[in-house]
Length: 258
Image 1 (cartoon, rainbow, N blue to C red):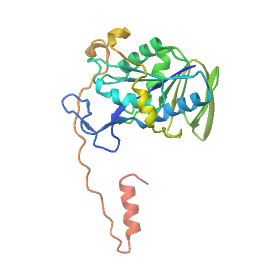
Image 2: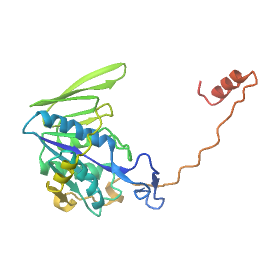
Image 3: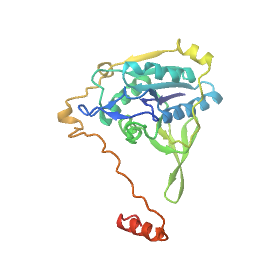
Image 4: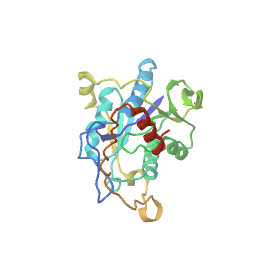
C-alpha cells in the first residue's frame, strides 16, 4: 500500500503573520517557516499504520518554494520513505484551483492507494482542498475525520456532525482529511535525521506535470483589493458601582449579543 501525505510549510502560527499589501500574498519572511501542525498529524496517522503494516510505503508531498525543502525533509526524518515537491516560479500566490490541479497531477504520477491531508492549513484556512483533489482524481473522499482506520481495501473513521457522530467509510483508492483530534506528530530522532539525507526526494515543475496555470485574468480567481487589518478598538470597561449587572445587560443588548 502506498499512502501519500500532503504537507505544507506555513508561517509560524505563534509568530507575526502579514500580507504584502502590493501583491496580496502572505509575507513568509515575517515569521519563521514551520511544518503545518495539521500536516504533521496527518503524517503521524500514516506512519502509525505503516509501523504495524509491513509493505506500507509512506510518501510526503508538498507544493511550495525551493526554500521549503528543509521542512519537507522533516517528514522524511520522521519516517516517510520518499518525498515529492512541486516547485515552479508560476506558483507563488496560486489559488486553490491551481494548487489542486498541480497536486492532483503529481498524485497521478506518483500513484497512491490513500491520500491523507489536514482538514485545513493554518495560513490559507481554505478547508476545501481535500474535496477538490478527490473530484479531480475521481476517487471517494472522507473529510474531517476525528478517527481513522485503514484497511486493505477501505478506510473508515468518525466525523462530528450536528448533534452526534457519523461513521463513514470509503473504498480505496481514496482521499481523506483529518482534524486536530488525531495524535501529535512524532519527533524525528538522530537516526531518522541522518537517514533522511539519503531518501528519494523528487522535484517537479508544472510543465513536467502537464499543468498549465493559464491566464489568471481569464480563468482564475482575482484579488480586487487588499488592505491591512485595522487596529483593534479599545474595549468598554464597566466599573461596578452597584449597577454593573444592569450596565452589562444594556451593553449586550445594544451590541446584539444577548
